[in-house]
Length: 316
Image (cartoon, rainbow, N blue to C red; front, side, top):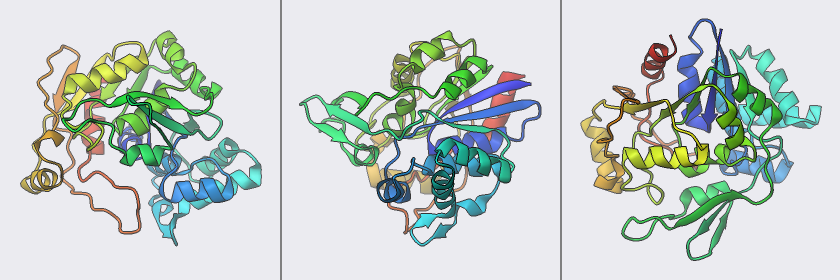
């Protein structure tokens, strides 16, 4: 039985877990950021005083296959409401999540990266501090010529790695990081106190999934090497395997991204290393934005089954 831990946020973790849950003799654990404060999640955090359910819900859907949890009930996703209600009933978000995972027969475990809801902050080089994950997501963290204007990403208050997350990392055979928003989905996990020390103590092999495109205002003009070096800086160790998409975007996908963001949105993949595995990892489906969703989503995504096939070759 191989233990695989995923580290990330909502859509990225959903995509990876959806493919991995088909593996035999594998135990999955999803470590999920607790910094989300946008959309339905943000409303529930503010009005109900609950932990952010959105990213956890996506992992629960992936591991259980219960897609109806993503249906909207008014302005909220059904799964978000259920997670919030269970937290109120049990008095503990993790306990409520554990019950729902059992009820929906989730093929693995979901662990919040911290036991408390976290407030993410970004300090710009001029000293300005942006508070809140949703505000950081839409902020311009680069200069006009595409340079880096970010000084640091940090938590408003001391945010400690969930002890259950620590145990999962130390027991893991493989740890998969990404894909996802670098500053809002991936790094928020890596900067939890004790995370770096734990990952350095782990004997697990690290698999890093490089994003498909750059994000406007955050990573425009980045190449593969920049993604790798940024993640490895926060990890404090090198990734053992780096997965890069070599599939060709469709004409429509290219046209829409070029129109919206320009040529700098495409990641230059010239990085060469024995650690790199280049495969077609691209989903042919073009995602559409839900009119009721206030969070801007990516138009293209990784293909769950293609990812699973490549990861299967690594772990067998």
